[in-house]
Length: 106
Image 1: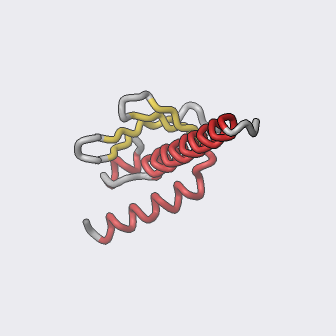
Image 2: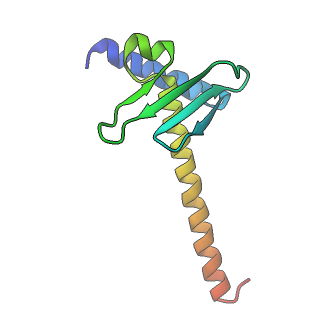
């Protein structure tokens, strides 16, 4: 990995963190996501993650130019981490509720 590649990744991370709320992410369920900017529905990108190689790709101009992860790849990763955290919180709540019900506290 070259210094330029590292700078590209750092830039992608910074841009994704700044712009995360501006994008809608929709999973196709096949290791593929559609990423669309909320105010620009005509410009959406497809992000793919290879489950065997862990390579991420995107069809945006930035990825095609640099061949390194772009902000759309990072935004998908952030989205998936947020979903996993939400699921973990929901599971914890369900377990707490089940314990309260079992103890007669509901």
